[in-house]
Length: 230
Image (cartoon, rainbow, N blue to C red; front, side):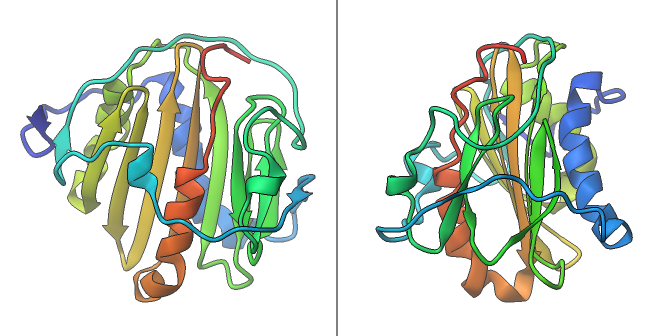
């Protein structure tokens, strides 16, 4: 276990970190890019109740501690979003719509109040009507064979001041952060072939409104295809 504060400084981000960097960049560029939305195909769902249980999939470690994970590999492929072998739409709670990425095979139940903002073969961004709530899901090939710890040590080194906690188990890492009045969650699954990432942020003052949704979406973010490159 190594403390985030004691972590030594890393060099420039490896190319494989570009996917996650693009997710953060997309959030910053939302207002400027309005009007270029291409909605994804979504599978509507209904039923059950909202569970707030990221901890059921990821074992907690103390806030600002790091443990090592599993390694990873590379390649590239095709687009779209409709069906993949992850969660069944019947198992998704009311108030959510299932998004599945055909290229990387990951899926997530999306809060129905969020609308598709941008779409590509690698993933999708969804936003609230005022663009203050942003959900981004994306995939990328693990060309540098990174482990979960490698991935986050390099990508988040310069942002450690805002990191509230890090939980790591096997190939999955969850980080929570608070920067400039925004609360955020990032869940990443780092496999031997590819890396799938979910990022959700909202205003700190709306924690009561969105925190349960954040926990639910992260708990049901499934990434069965990270063992291969796409």
